[in-house]
Amino acid sequence: MIEAGTRLEQAIAAERRQALGVLLQHPLLSAAGPLSAEFGLVRRHAAWLREWLARNPGWSLQIDSETARLRKTPADLADATRPAREPASGLPFSRRRYVLLCLALAALERGDRQTTLGRLADEIVGFAGADPALAAAGITFSLQGQDQRRDLVHVIRFLLGLRVLVRVHGDEQQYLLERGDVLYNVNRPALAAMLNVKRGPSTIDETALDRRLAALVDEPIPDTDESRNRRLRSQLTRKLLDDPIVYYDELTEGERAYLSSQRAFILAQIEEATGLIPEVRREGMAMVDETGDLTDLEMPEEGTEGHLTLLLAEHLAACSRRDGPMAVGHAALRRHVADLVARHRAHWRKDVAEPGAEVALTERTIDRLEALRLVRRTEDGVVPLPALGRYALDPGDGAVRDEALTSDLWEQAE
Image (cartoon, rainbow, N blue to C red; front, side, top):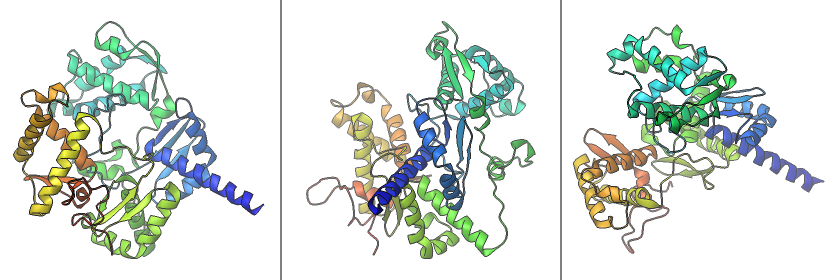
């Protein structure tokens, strides 16, 4: 009986880890669609999930018969390294796509339970034309050109991925080619759950963007030691759940002081609830995802992008080992990428050899390394960060280190 009870406890713990992992990856879940089984798992463990999320990262979870919404406020509102992406292509949202997304949500909120892509496009053009702030910012929409229509399609596919829209008939490619329209059902519960704020935007008087963002998600706390400690624990837990690496020198003085006494407790709570494995170094911490289930952005290993990313990581790690934590200039990095293209062009995609291709290649690769917290952009160039040491070449055999436990860049804690 004891063994059977133990097995049951282990099965429940495994289900809870899976449910929490799904919510962290998909903060908006619908009862229908490809994640319907996972939605059922979240509903089954709703009480435990609500309690753990409120106590640790300080996030709220709302669940009804149709949707589950994790109100997941990031630790750093200024972090621009992980933008929204169109599900199929993985292309990041540009500034214009974010504006289009907001206008599309406004149009859907005022519309019926069904709409077409053409009707939605017309409403977006009307909203944009009536907003002088958009015109003053240099953002206009006519949706006549292919680029603007393509941006709208990327936004629509993003909403399809969240099941805010459900395609009934047609295809977005027809709209792009101006050969037809698309009919959608509007999932109103999912639409209503999209906005993740503590206050309504219309109630905020601030005009500066950073202060408006802060006011939208501001979480006032009582002026007590217990409340301040709870806020510190929530901030640190959010960082460890969201960020690939948390460096000590990027924490506030209060966070470092709290972490010095509570690190073991915080890491144990996250490991038990998620299955992530703590990796503690002198420079910082990481929660390692050995299964890859909670990883939204990986170091690529195959193809042109993967090979280039590893080669550039290796180059930057070597620069850091030779010169210390100094910025490597953008021009120098582009020249190095051009040299790599010349050396490997026979095995890489043909378009990488086109004139000027190294500029876009370099930017995309640095974007990925920055999102993984392996480098930091500055005005002077790109600064390698300590964890990049695991991609340094071993001086003895020339192999790339898998775990740089003895690296002088990412040192094992004593």
